[in-house]
Image 1 (cartoon, rainbow, N blue to C red):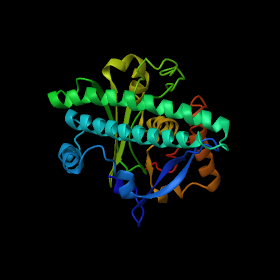
Image 2 (cartoon, rainbow, N blue to C red):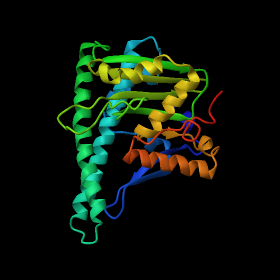
Image 3 (tube, rainbow, N blue to C red):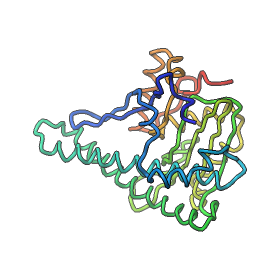
Length: 289
């Protein structure tokens, strides 16, 4: 599915964050090889292929709850690896910078806070994985998750497999305030899987968190495709870190539009309450059928 987003040289685009103890962290668009974009050592190759064969070697059935579960489980494994690897990177930079007398104090403070934030993310994401491990072992695939899906009759230029913690819903109601680290965050699962002729968008939440995340979930369930894409764009650009973008599609944006989107991505990473403007920040602006 990811090959749909690649260019002729099998490269795709991703937002990649730069961490430094001399300046505030920021992300920019980077071209990377498709193997790098798809590889994560969450499972050994043999177990990965066996576990996910039903959604990677066969046609995904949107009416099959096992397929829904596998898509969500894959997203959790991706997020566990992402959180762990980013935490290790930031921790190592922070430790090295403590020995550097030229480190910027403000940047250092941000690095320490980010390391702690990613440690908590790693801790709680692994707790979600353990919940789903039990569902997998017991073959009770909907015991923890509430599933949703949208099928679009055209391919989107984005591939995504992510789990994230939105601070606000679409009406700016607080979902996660992150003030008390003892309170588990509310997690939203989102995967965008394009093929040659269509796109499947899977989303899910933990049933035990439905009271907090139900507003996002049910809004996505009950809107038409165009509004769905506006909401999907907002979720992706504000809250996800690992989406893959088609280089040829990105080139449809002007340089000014690209800089606006990159700035918004970085600004909302620091302040997610910044308003989303569907006429300015819509990453699907040129993707409608």
